[in-house]
Length: 470
Ligand code: B12
Ligand SMILES: *[C@@H]1O[C@H](CO)[C@@H](O)[C@H](O)[C@H]1NC(C)=O
Ligand SMILES: *[C@@H]1O[C@H](CO)[C@@H](O)[C@H](O)[C@H]1NC(C)=O
Image (tube, rainbow, N blue to C red; front, side, top):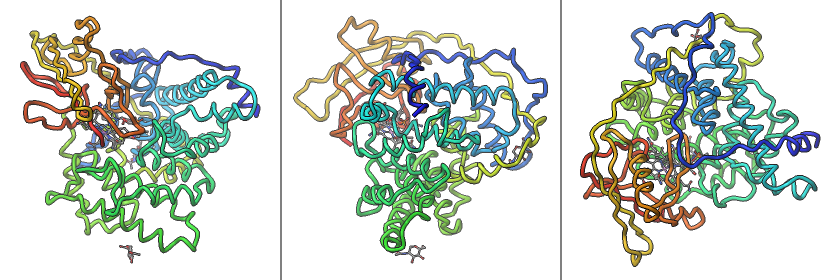
């Protein structure tokens, strides 16, 4: 109770921005005395890939010690700990400041929620709690657990109870896919006591289609993979009477994942392959049955020269696999919490942040098409946008909006994967009816494999935003 009152007094108001600000990285004034470049990797592809990718993530740390304006701090901290729990236990100053930022962000988010729905009676309290997104809260809990926090008493707040409460109404707008639901179950499952209830397990099983796959599973089995990791973690909470049904359904989801494996060992793109591999490991499927080493090679091939895997979201989801771990490995990582003061002089350094200073290219012009594939009576809109070569599609969109004098507009939301397009010309994504803006490229309308921050338009190119149902 005390916690809720103090949160009400806190009322931290942070403005949420729609347009992305360029990231401000920290200056190296605060370099630890003990910092050195991490031990170079020798000969082992996977270790090298892991070390390089963690180094890249650390370079993304910003001036306030968080990541991606606070959107990605929790998923980065979790990924860093799953990559190697010595990160936290090394006690490097930048690490500790990053964890402090994680705490501040969550307290701010709790405070904002309090402000939104006011303070007072306990019935009001429940509506207030419902404001925090399940996926975000789950990632905060996993990140906090992996860094030795008590999530039952986080500055007086019971985060596990809060999560459990917020998971009750499913599906609803903003919480309507089993990827998020699985993150919730993984957080409940790994925060100490038996918080996973039979109803959670039932919901995960009920979401399956006949083939064991879920809505939003396509070429890759991302959702089924998260579900298998969550179910593997929660297996111990299944009552005996429900066991045989559980195993049957569980096997069915594993079959979905395995059915997506290609001849070359991949399960779709690098992210999907990494998540599928993590799931099959979590489910203890013998590696030879699904050619685990070949799948791993396919993932490693997707690493860029700069050591990330395309963007921050891809990198954090792939990292656990490189450390032979998965989203259910927080329990293993937590074991290091009981060992006091390990290698405190072995702190890691993020290395010098490289802020690329690229010259703007010559101006190029592209066509942006806004098409409504659901209400086909609605005429499509074409706008051209001009920006320097090398700009992202998102920057072209901003340019188009600024110069259209109200004729063209969009809204977006920052995520681990960059800006997600949430609305065009007033027509917004609709989570209730599963209608969303998708991205297609060129006259053959190829589906984009990444978002508007990862697409670098070519002169005269055509970029289509197509409203469709998934
Ligand atoms: C569900 C889902 C969607 C749903 C989201 C709505 C919903 N009902 O939840 C819909 C169908 C809208 C969607 C759309 C797209 N998606 Co999608 N999506 C997912 C999925 C399966 C789960 C995301 C999630 O719930 N995360 C959990 C919550 C807690 O995290 P969150 O940050 O709040 O999640 C939000 C963002 O992930 C955002 N989002 C979803 N997809 C994408 C893609 C991009 C590029 C961005 C910036 C944001 C974004 O929507 C989520 C819910 O609000 C992921 C799988 C994965 N491995 O992450 C793919 C994934 C994120 N999507 C992907 C892609 C490519 C797309 C599209 C670009 C496809 C297209 N050609 O149109 C579009 C984005 C278009 C746009 N408007 O900007 C890729 C991104 C790859 C990359 N390297 O960047 C992923 C990783 C799948 C994969 N394995 O390739 N997606
Ligand atoms: C984790 O990092 C520590 C310190 O840098 C290192 O000694 C250890 O070998 C690493 N563990 C793994 C499994 O990579
Ligand atoms: C589920 O899969 C396991 C391992 O592949 C197998 O031993 C078991 O018999 C299967 N159970 C059911 C009910 O299909």
